[in-house]
Image 1 (cartoon, rainbow, N blue to C red):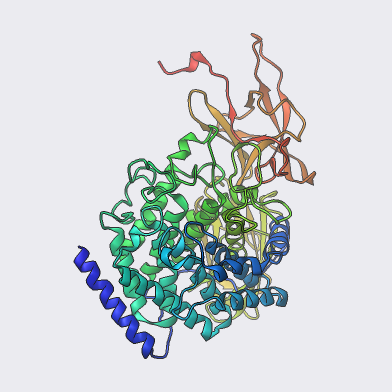
Image 2 (image 1 turned 180 degrees about the vertical axis):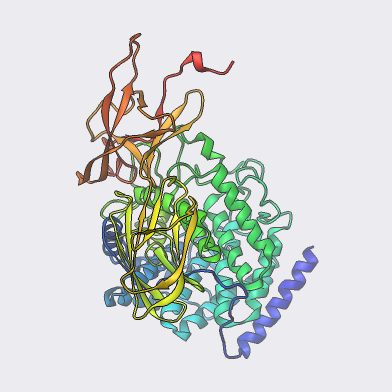
Length: 631
């Protein structure tokens, strides 16, 4: 096996050397598999989510000190830390923000960031902050990955050839170093090589932009190494629970830790890119199987997971107090992986998952003014600022949060070969192209998810026959859909309703979703309950009136598990939405206690003050009734 690997790297090294001396003109290479969905051209959003996007745009993206992100690359003395990831994480989120709102001010910042980074590239192509003797170790390749992703994102909006050439030099240098050292990439870095080999994603993207087959060969070599005894076996273990793929690590944050959530999903993002290039079904199947496993065993009620940054079978344990719960890097990467699968397949389950995570775990991790992100976000307790990392003035989650946040606008409405697809609901105007190459605007009028009524207006120059696909969320069991007041029949929760017709400018689609409060139960000893309304998880917050948040309360739900919720406030005291519900408090009286009204708020707002006195709770433990216990 080692001899084969040595031969393959030697071939790559020779071809790299030849290419560096006489590189042909680069030309793009179309993927073999084309995504079903393409993002909208533009989006102009209004409302709560738009306010959060604007806050992040101003106070996180534009406020970043670019010089500080570049400075580690000038020193090149590191041996173990991960400063080199921050430039790429911030930069890729900034490009997403620029695509949403292409303002000259941000473009100037992007130009400065790229030019600053390129001045640090060494003559042999290296961009990084590691001392030469420590190249390839720890987080070095991981940092190079983020540099490549950032540079390629900039190339995509500018078509600046010198940036593409610099990215190629960076990739060539990595390939050469691996050949010179005669090492497996999966034996370098951390977490069974997942951190280092997640470079698969930009290597695949580089191939599509250059057409240079060496990068495709290198990508395939990375995946081959995954399946060696030393590799993370991301394909062959796709049927194994993500928390059980390897023995418990003796060193939690070391090479042998194979359950690291963020890095694992990053590798699967790269595998999807390789599937697009090769059409090898086994790659896509591995990602889909793993997605199902993560969804079934790890993702909690607010749409995220992981403890101590690793998978741990956490879905069934989510009512407990958990150490370092749901890292924001995991939250953002789960959204990104779902976005990859959504645009590839168009399946509603991925949009459902994004919506659940976006409105709850992601927005809940974001400080309301957009300047900061929590590193961990519990389901009860308090939200706290994350610590600074690597002397950079921020941490990995502050850099990652906006990468999930800004995926939303241009994927709310997407175009497809047969028409358009409405994935998400939010007030605003979304512009894209019809199958007949007409400019079309989809205007949504709604205050969703406060309300469940969405009016969608079609605006286009002339009538056109096409299909509009409208998502019916899986949780909406009673929905109505109409076009110009004419009811559309046969809609199914968890699928897209397809409306095929000749569309005229001014046509109105009206969707009414089931916004009844749903009581979710989990566990037996004791049983816990939570309340969800639409996509929004509700919580008790110490700022709101009522008994202490640890008091035992039982919801006054009907036999089908629904509870009546009354809107009790919106955008008050830093809380997005508040709802009044009837609960029965704990009682040791034989006749019981009288029901009381409680105020619940959305999870994103609950405790989101970075104040140690502001506590909240999602899961409510219930009294144990011995008469109802299983014998």
